[in-house]
Length: 230
Image (cartoon, rainbow, N blue to C red; front, side):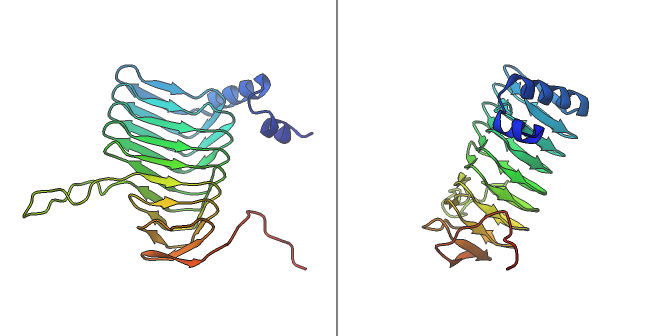
């Protein structure tokens, strides 16, 4: 068995966790925490040219589920009682995980592959959750809110509150895709290049394309390996 295979199959073994800690120490990862009762747990996590910034109180960043790798990635929290959690064996390259305000949450499952710039932004106490085995290309954006409130002039009521986003297992996001507030994407789906998703599809295993995105094909599945030519 190769070392790479051993690490993948035994992410919690003490030799693997020690190597991860040593690699993280040598490669560096800037951590800046200000406030009270904040936790940043990152043992067993490879950090390279990445930074973690926490401003506020009672926030948690949990990256030590097992063999997570962060490269050129920024984790930023500003506020209180927020949480960012990674599962196991996630590879984040050029990621931005960003929370502002109070009570927000970002959660990744296991076996995430983030290949290029991906921005995940939570505000107003909402959340963004991802299942297992998701794939992100480049220039992928998730936003639960519009950053600034908009009000109806007659009633004075706000017309654009933030809403949480949820993503199931084994979902593939192509280049230059945007997923907006309140969207739920179910297992096995594909968000095609350039799509802007504003509404939730009713089913999983679909291809979403266009602006605004619509289901263009149903009953599909996908894999990362390309088949050989016959």
